[in-house]
Length: 476
Ligand code: ARG
Image 1: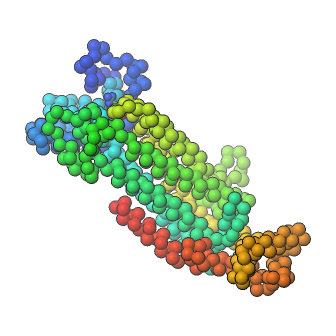
Image 2 (image 1 turned 120 degrees about the horizontal axis):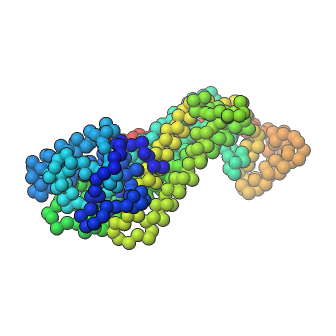
Image 3 (image 1 turned 90 degrees about the horizontal axis):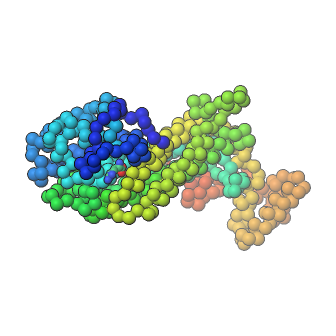
């Protein structure tokens, strides 16, 4: 979970930022257990962005001279360059990325650097950096979800343009229920992902608040201007309550929920593809680049992406449950426990984004075995409901029609005759009802809005494309 492949080298020296009150330095045990530098390094660019906004605010209200502000901004630029190039040198007392950057800025800029932390605490600094990081990264997850929507929509359109449009059995309880179009099935998953994107956007909007200026917990006696720094960072508003600002991790919990639900949606897609690519179903064949082999069984072609899309959902849900458990007992305001917000968020973002990309690639490149799909979709038992509805059209109460057709099914099964023959010979049914068994006939009769047949698809194609376009615009 910890990403140690982030910029920088380590050397052992230096004093803790908060050393003033202490006679001795921190023990190795303390540093090993409490450090967050091993994972919060990836906040470096966001920490610098927050510091830039803070310096501009300090200069704006006259707490820092223009010259000092310029020196600190230059030093922040230099640190940015070192970080980007991967040659920032960490020291053993850099307990987190925020202390490391401030230490280096002070080293470069001298006395003006020591003014950077004026009117600021690591508590509001950390909260700010994490909001900046998640604003960018969650939008990128939403964009990856939209790419998967695009793949599903494109494959749905392709399945509809075949002649006849590709049909599959629709399932309930994983038992064949009624025929549906493959496009309809693929679009169902796209709708779930569009809700995921909407959920992320919604959470991003609620999180669009800057905590900078809340200080450790109570604001500042200095004439700082949180609105100014909020605007510098493009936040919609500054915090309203300093205690809330430094202790609120609701947005992290919301993101983890949104990511868990994407994980659940990917898991459901994954489960279907494991089934569809099995020899038993045989509905789809994976491209070699998106399948794996077995170390022992030479004939195997495994759907590992689909399986891990399913498998990783557990860990994503765990990340959400873990954070909620961390938060539940915390008194106001900041507590060090809150440092535990980052690893689950980083992990869930990474896993979900990679999962979305891999599943999109898998589906985009797979081949649908439409002959197999058609054979399964045209199995005669799938027409039973349509026969019952045919009787309803002729005035029979549905419950009665259900019983009539149920008996036909039972008789056909026990006598080993086909349902078509049984229906054709039935006094209440006959040849006209038997014609419903023709290929694609039952599906063609599915007329209601949002239904699974070809007549309803053009409207659904437009609805989905419109919703995807709206999502695309919202991400621009
Ligand atoms: N690295 C810590 C975190 O991520 C910051 C510590 C802030 N404050 C403190 N008083 N120790 O939460």
